[in-house]
Image 1 (cartoon, rainbow over the protein chains, first blue to last red):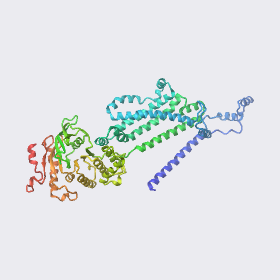
Image 2: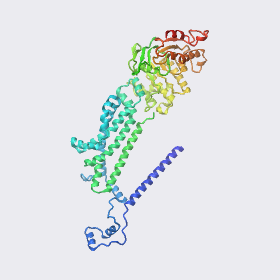
Image 3: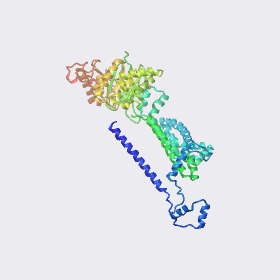
Image 4: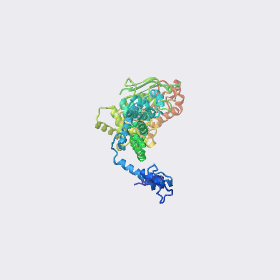
Length: 302
Length: 297
């Protein structure tokens, strides 16, 4: 192994250690913030006999109630402790795909619904955006003609389309897909057009002198030349789609990881909400990583 | 051998928004199997002329005929080696050349394409680098791949746009030798732009001298009076070499300027430095045909 590689490895190891340290600190803060004070040995505030009786009637332990009254905390802080979180994670991971009816599905199943919606909406967007981007990139006339529309439509929040989608499509599931479609189309469209318009003139001239047919020109010259830019757009689109799906599912309800978050909030089950938030983050990261790989595969050194 | 394989008639180009033509009234011919170099100062439109010959650009006036048929667009009959190699960086050397070969012979099988590609890669001495991407090659190697690609489609005419401009002197010399050898083997017709007078003398059978722009023209055609078996190593020992060289340099340094704005003759004058007029005329030996030229202009 050469010294350069060794140095790089050491650097990576140090970074990993530092990451672990930061994680430990964060978990420590969490632990301290949710720490339940130990019951004080002797209750400072004495409860009246009626109060003790009432507490017993309500199924509560009068001793701890008194302790809480003394320290000014309620029985539950509301925010889960690390151990409660661990239990929730274990429970969710133990059976991710159970289905006990509309409001009680495993997180894996909900995730599958969300990924399905994102995948479908994203695929439809790619099918429209990439060919259209090709046309726009090739023809300055069409670029100019479509530019005002793109500029106006691009900044619209995808959720703003939701009422119109629900009204016209009359199906919440398809409306969700439509929202993903409309939010992922712009980065792909713009990047494809930009990449195609930026293909080096000399490569096109080589193809022209070789009398390359249009179809071959598109697939063997322009597409590989513009692929890194197109994939950048696809990566951005996927990031946005994953952001939007959670919000859309919260709005529409029914299924999906976004709905899961909202449903667990309604159940006041914060451990499940936190778990779902983590899952959303990790899945988003994996999707991005996948596109980073693809991007690396099509990038060329000039 | 046909006398006029390529014929250029009254070629002119005026770019939109410009009042004066970059060049106009450009006339010359190239015979089959001939190696022709064109020299001129920057901005006289050499690259535009080459692009018109390639069919990549259209001229404002005039015509180009190849084999008595007008050139009206790019064609596999004319291979081009571009100034900046123009290889596709996402393809290996093999695939870059295969791309060209499949364009010329779409019906060929994989093995046939591969065999053909390997033959031409070997011709430019890059067999060991055949599966490398252009980014892993040096500038000289890239330009060799560009040359191999142009030769691989076996064009009837080869157009080279200052192919060695960006290379260092040593690399340039080696590739010049290779080009000379390949052209001798294949009897390739070549039209080449260069800025290098020595390169022109080494490679060309005839050198077209362009006057300065605007309204540049091919003012003179200089015959290379040296033997075709010339070699780079011994070139400068031939007494003819300096006569030709002086003639070319004199033109570029002093005369090309005076011939701008269309003052060059419509039909280029032919010069054979050191042959037509023998040595004993000391003052005019270097440019024997200059005197009539002035009177015409």
